[in-house]
Image 1: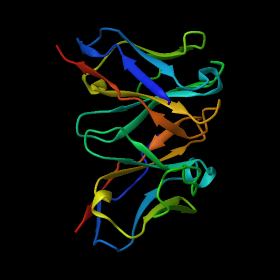
Image 2 (image 1 turned 135 degrees about the vertical axis):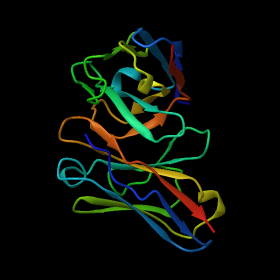
Image 3 (image 1 turned 120 degrees about the vertical axis):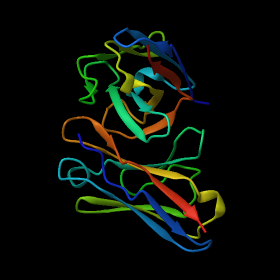
Image 4 (image 1 turned 30 degrees about the vertical axis):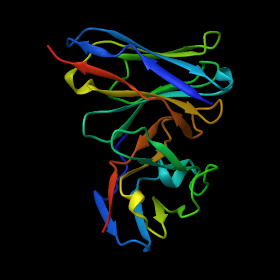
Length: 121
Length: 110
């Protein structure tokens, strides 16, 4: 069974950094692209970032480019999102999502339960 | 990277069919066949319903179908059931190498 378990969320002050992690199991991690998608309280889904199987292709939504960095460790079967210069509007539930193939353009098919990030002073 | 446009709400009676539209641009929906649809019940994780415009993952009911014409993708749910009442999101790959979601549609089963 595919499992994605996010961690690292919490309450953080504006401008402070945070590192989100996602531990994957139940599939061949290095065969798949991975994504981060977030959902602000009571709002819709927003795609944040993606990384292909070998880390050579990374993409970001405009609102986080330059502040967030996606990375992966295939040996550890883990996905990360280093978030810096946090803003109140970054407050959301952050989902780790598996891609159906190694490429960022293929569908996001399995979602983790998410980790909550709250940005507030 | 503007969000795709979905109606805020749609409704239908049990047994009827409804269609949810998702409008984008030539940079996303009409440019690629990488359109997908998700169902999200309150407090739950999104579930993939349709991928690559009109394909269903195994285990998804054939009451759900997808299509695309020009800049608009559509999700049709036939034989509406009470359990279908929830939120639905479309998404598309874009020419920027990113993904974009629609704002979501709340389906009410009358």
